[in-house]
Length: 454
Image 1 (cartoon, helix red, strand yellow):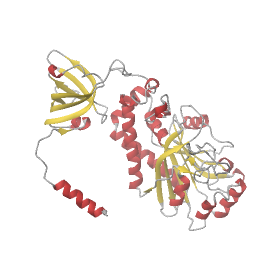
Image 2 (image 1 turned 120 degrees about the horizontal axis):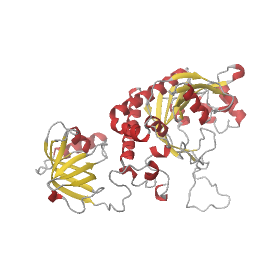
Image 3 (image 1 turned 90 degrees about the vertical axis):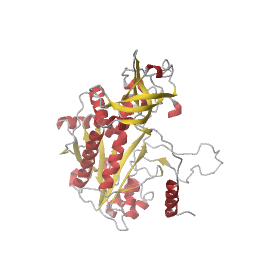
Image 4 (image 1 turned 45 degrees about the horizontal axis):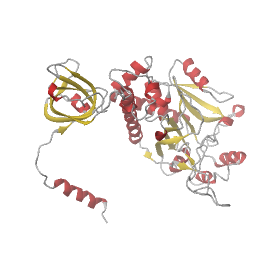
């Protein structure tokens, strides 16, 4: 059986073997071609036609491959044009990269050969050149909308933000954990769960109807699994899909979304959790703004003209006798000058069993924190976890959950350490920095109207 070392040696032998010599055109992505400072001969660009303009002595194309918002201009002899070369068609263009005479661009591709790889029926294609369709219109075509400037910009921002989040945690010494998607835990306790069942088995009388012998659900949070890992690693995080069976078609709810969650052991101060939330937000936003300036600017110019990214945060302490609704969250942000706001110390009876009791007399709060941001409301939520066995056991017994969470109590008996953590909704983060009003416009595939993409 090959070990890792043997596999590496085998690959090295393959790569060092002599190959037939024939010169091929160097393939460049559009973003690489646009960033080129020098002319280059015999290159190849593959992508989709964004515009075609034919004059008597010259043919102009603009090609985009999704690597940048800006397209690469192609100039060619009109004889290279044929009927399939239309807006939306997939093409491969080979030629030389030359200095452009146009002051708005550094280089252009002088085509020697244009091959249409896949034609596009422009009469039935739902998007037209030089038309800026509203997001509501593009949402009707979830299988095609990624070809629009708006959605391609969003997906580039989403990709960079994902990489920046992983980089932030790696640079700060966190271990990445893949937490289960199918679980028997209801971390939030809100009852908004998707029940997992088999669909092709007829249940016999008296037979256990549960595939795993216990009820199983799509996860609403990886927190409890992270707490397990925090008992062996001081800092852990996960970044994956979570699900809420909340029957809502509002602009701020999704049935499936991505959650960034982190857990830190030997943490005794809520301020430590707050600082990590703030550092994560600032670091990731700074990277996105530096790496995707044109994509972010497109949203701020055309989708949300008044949007300004603000990364400074100030702490505001409020104790409410009832839970905060979206209207309350937005009011607090507006009252504090439309900047991110931390709200801390929530009433004990409103929060889940795992949050640490502040033991603060008649107020009776827990060490919890929410980060509220302009236009969105809650972006992050976290707390210190109750590490004291007798406090946790007493609360679980009152809730009738002691047996179900015996394993959770075990964590407090074997080397328990003060710890805490938080979660951040990834799509809400994208809403925040881009200013998108409807959360369904920051996901790759909206859940309607095509059932095949549900």
